[in-house]
Image (cartoon, rainbow, N blue to C red):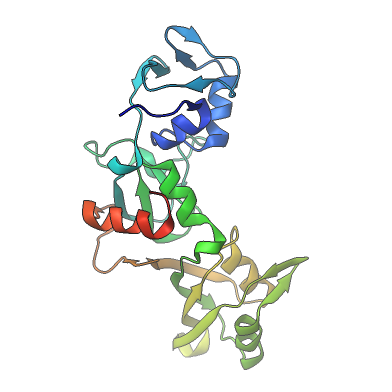
Length: 247
C-alpha cells in the first residue's frame, strides 16, 4: 500500500532514528541524503519509493502497524540521548546489539533510574508524551530528611517553584531510614516536567538522593534487572496505539 509523502523530519522520527527536532539538525549538518542527493531543507517530502540515508546508511520507513515497544531498566549514570555533547555514556550506547533502532518515550535524567519505554515509532512516542493522554508515572523517591504535612499538602494540590506551576502529585510516605535522616516516598505524576521531582524537593530543602521510576502508563518495572530490556507483545502495542488514536 502506498504511503502519502511526508516531511523528512517526520519520516526519520517515524523510523525511530531520532526526534523531529534532531532530524532537522541532521539535515542542517548535511548528514541526510535522498536518492543520492544531500538534503538542504527539513521541508523535503519523502515518498515510499525514495531512498533515504543517514550518514550513508539506508533508512527503512516505519509504519505505525510495525511499531515495537520495549520496557528498559535504565541504570543511573546514563544520559537519555542518542549523542551527548559532553561525551558521557548514553542509554543507547548500552542497549543490546540485537535491538532495532529505537527512541525513548520521555526521558530520565542522568542520576535517575528505572523504567524507560523505548519504541521504533515516533508517532507512538509523541502520543504517549502528550499531556492530554495523561499517562501516569510512578516513582519511588528517597529524600534527605522527612517531609512535613505541609509539604505533602502542597504536593497534593500542586506547587509553584521559581515561577513554574506543577500539577498535583499523589504522594505516599513509605518509610523513614537512619533515624529520620532519609525517607522513601511513592509519587504518582500525570504531567512530568523536566526534573520536576528534584526541583520540587529542593524547594522544600529535601534533596533527592535516589529516584526510581517504577511505572509508566500500564507498564511496570517489576523485577527487570538494571540494563535489561523486555519487549511488549505486538497485540498489546496495537491496542495501545488504537487507544491513543495513533492508528
